Image (cartoon, rainbow, N blue to C red; front, side):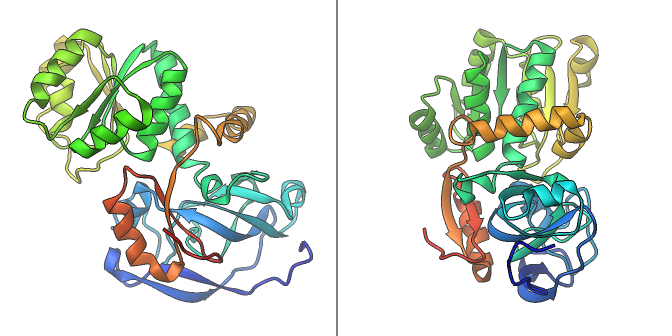
Length: 344
C-alpha cells in the first residue's frame, strides 16, 4: 500500500565493499527488496554517524553482515509504503524516526526498509535531530535507570564531551544525580564547562589529572562509573572508587582492551564490572515500557535529550563526513542528508 507516491525500486546507498574497512566505502545503486508484512518503506531525510557505525565499518561490531552492505543504525524520514498490518498502515505518510535491524541494510541510503515496530512518529521535529532519536537518548535513559536501580547519587563518566556524554550529564543532573565528567583534551574541558556549566570536569591529558581525579573522587565518592574509553583509563578510575562501586562499560574509544584491572578491588572491596548494550536493554523491556520510553524521548527531543548537529553531508561525501565526525565529536553530530543540500 502506498501513500500516493511513485515508489522507487532502487536506492543509492553507501556500501561497504569487499572487506570491512573505512577505505572500502562506495556509493552504489542497489535494488530495494519487496516489502514484507509489518514492514515499511522510508524516504530517508537524515541519518547520523554514531560511534557504533564507525565500529561496524571496521568490522568490530558485535554482528558483521554479509558484504556488500549498507551502514547506518538510525534515521528519520517519511513512510512511503506499507507491507501490510495495522502499525504500518497507521504510520503511512508520517515522518518517523527509526532504528534499523542488524539483519537488514542500514540507513545511509536514499530509501530504507524497516519494521514498523522500530519506527516512532516525530511530527514537526527537526529531521536532523529526530534522526538521532534512538541510540543516544535511549542509552541516556538506560543510564538513568542504572543509577536509580543502584541508588547511585554520584557518578563519573568518560567521553563526557561526546553527544551522549552531554546528554547523560543533562538528564542525570535534572534527576538530582551529581556527574563527574572526564574528557581527553583541554579544549573539550573548556567546551563542556562553557556549554553545560559543569562544576566537575577533569582533563585526562593534564599532567595533574591523577592527582585531580583522586581528590575529586575522595570528595564526591561516586559509586557508579560509565566507561566509554577502556585501555588503562578503566583501572585508573576503578582503583579510586569506593567499596561496592559499579563500573558499566559501554564503549571502547581507545580501541584497546581494559588493562590491569585489579582483582583485589573486585574481591576485597566488592566492586563490580558489567556492560550496557542498548539492543539488549531494549529487548528486556515490555511493549508498554518501550512505548513510554519512546514517548519520553519524543517529549524531550527539544530539551534534555536534544542532539546538537554540527554538519550535514550528501552520501557522495562519505569520506569527508567521516573525517569531520572523527575530528569534531565534541561539537555535535554529523548527519547524512541523502535528498537535501549539504551545509556546514
